[in-house]
Structure formats: C-alpha cells, structure tokens
Length: 511
Image 1 (cartoon, rainbow, N blue to C red):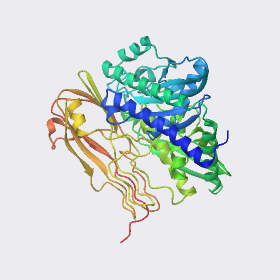
Image 2: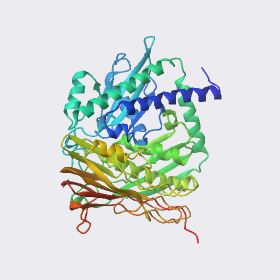
Image 3: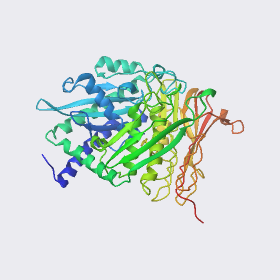
Image 4: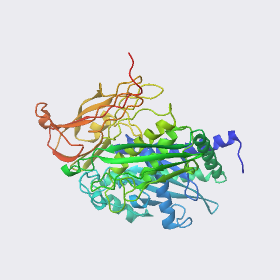
C-alpha cells in the first residue's frame, strides 16, 4: 500500500497520538513525584521487527536509546515468543538499557493471531537499591554497586516482587510499575485498531526526509572536542575526560565517529553505546530539520562509530549511572559543535550541559530531580532561562508537590541573574535554589560544568559554571563549596544550595 501525502500525515498523527496517550496514562497512574510531576518517562511504538515508528515528545535520551531495548527483548524471546498480554521488562545497560533506574517495558501487539508491532515505555525509578539512595552512587566503580540489574525477562508477579523488594521505596516502585503496565496495555489496544496500517511507509518517509536534509549539506568532515569535568568524587578522579567527534557528510549519508574519545573511567561517568546513539539522533534532527519524523527510517542514513571501551561505549562491568544523564549531554554538545560549522544558522550556543542530578534519601523515602539551567543563545533569539535542555525534557518539580511529598522545604528558588553568556542573543540564565532538610538525610550530587564553561558560538560569551554549597544549620558564613560529584550526610536544619550553569551567548554582543 502506498499512501498519499495527506493520508501519510494522518497516519503519523494517529500513531503519535497513541504514544502521547501512553505517556499520559503513565504519568497519571504513577506513584512517584519523579514520574507524575517531573514526567521522567517516555513512550513509543515499534514495527514487528523492532524499528521505531513514532515517539511521543518526551525525553530524547530515553527515546533515542529505546530501540536497543526493544531489539534486546526480541533477541531474547523472538518475534513470536511473547504471548498476547505478556510484557518484557529490562533495565540492563549492557542489553539495550541506559542506566539501572530506567526500567523499560515492552509489549507485543497482536491482531488476528499475527504480530503487528510493539508498544514500549521507559520510566526512571527513583530507587532500585545500590550503594546510596537514588541508585546513582558517584562512588561506584562497577555496575553491581548501582542497584538491581534486570536482563530481558517476562514481567511475572515473581519478577515484579523482586524489583519492588530491591528498592528503598517498595510501594512507590509497585505503583510506578503498574502505571507502566497500563500505559503499554493502552498502546497495544490502540495499535491493534490500526493493524493494517503500512508502518513501513512511515519509516520510508523518515528516511526520505533525512536523506534530503543531508543532501543539502556540504560534503566534508568537521571535528569538535569538549570535556567532562571529572569522573568521580575522589581527588584522583578530578581531571577532565575528552569527548571527541568527527562528523563526515557524504551525499545523503553521515557518519559520527568518536574515535579519540577517552577510555572508560573508574567512576560512573560512562555511557553505553545506546545512549551515544540517542544523543546523535537528537543533535542531527536539531541541526537539520526538527520536523523530520523521529523514527527508525530517519536513522538509516546515519552511521555511529563509538569505539568499545570508551566513555561513549563502555564495556561491562563499568558503572554507567551518570552516563545516561551527563555523558549524553556532552555527546550532544560535541555533535552540535561540529554541526554548527556544517549547518550555520541552525545551531545555537551550548546550553548548560548538565542535568544537575540531586538524589536525597531519608527514612523510607527517596527524592530524585534534575535541575534546569540556561539554554544557549540561538540564531532566532536569546536562550531560555531555567529550563531543561538537550538530552532531557523533564519538568521542574513544583514546590507544592515537592513539599507535600518530602520532609524538605524550598527556601529560595529563582533565576541566577547574570549567569547567561553575553551575545547578540545572550544565553539563558541558570537557576538558584536552596533546599532545607527537616531530618537527617543522605545526599548525592552528580553534576557537570563546574569547571568547563558552556561555550558561546560565533564570538558569544560562555555561560557561568555551576556551583553547589552546603550551609550547616543554614549558616551563610560557614558555607562549604561541594565537589561536582559527591555523597554527603546532611543533618536536620542544613541547607543545600545549587546554582546551575547559564547558557552560552550567540555571536558577539553589540553596543
């Protein structure tokens, strides 16, 4: 079946609507503020062969890597090995996952006895065991220290009980898993009503659009390099880690080659290859044409060379908790840095370049959040302030929801004035926020851009680096500056202050 342009767009919209509806079911049904309020979850539909058909506009690092999880489920069980009503669960970064917190559920869709596609969703579970509350310990040197690792298995009641029991917050885990099951059940039901839809037409359209966009670019190779500030909390881990890419455009195809990137590190700042591929997909669509459908077809002209054993393609048993949240940001930065020379006028200055991860655990509760910052100045205008940029698309937890759920108070929350880089179009401002803890807690921080600054573009100024401070008893005079990655104990009455980076400026400031 060949669809006309109008019918094709209608089909894409219908399928995308299903993925969006899955996301709403997941958020509304979830127990944790991390999913319900921050929307730290994603949903998508796939062909019977496991190629991405459509995704909701959720989180780039989830969606670009989710095809690897679906392929891992298919490899484990085959196309016909999962019965209607069954779902596969996995989080193993070395079998299609990203980091252990991101649990993926994959469900087959059957119609008239044949497999017509897959529904999948991914959600960040705030705690799955490990060395510290939140399951992303900065001190981890191998993945076993980060929590429960789940290969592709059927999500039976026994498996669900094991997942729940691994967590410091078991009832929250149970509620979030149930929400994921419900989201996929809805996706399967909706997709079954479109069993005769020509999904390959959607993929072929994505491929045509991407090839056309690449053909409009000049042929050649462009390189860019940047650094991660550190790979762990110890003194010997406080040195920069190189991330390097060479982007080669040849006709209607492109290669992203990360040869020259640093070897995987002893800390948790390592990414698996699926995370790197997701950052490439995000950067390429951003720099060419963001209206290109984000599907498997659009990635057919794209080749990613990520040398095994590097921080962008870590080998087992490396710890990878921060790879999903921090290495992904830097991979996107270097890809966009190279593409700025290929597609001038399409790429802005660097955003804050970090997710500013905050993990806090107390008696029977765990809190996780990534804090927004400044977007880089853009060809179309100034960067936005106080938002999540690049590989994350979550929200900031509302103060009311935060204070209702956790024994903490937000005593200061606003934009960090003057943190954006100067330019014709200045970078957006970061955030400044003070959290008062009302009981003794364990805090882990995993952040970047505390040494290296978000770059400006075309002569624009860099954004300000981020900072984090501990105020014992709320005392400003004795404030202690904290490392970019650390785990500390706070006592009731202490204040954690976070100042997030601003974005870089675009082109020189005038006047």
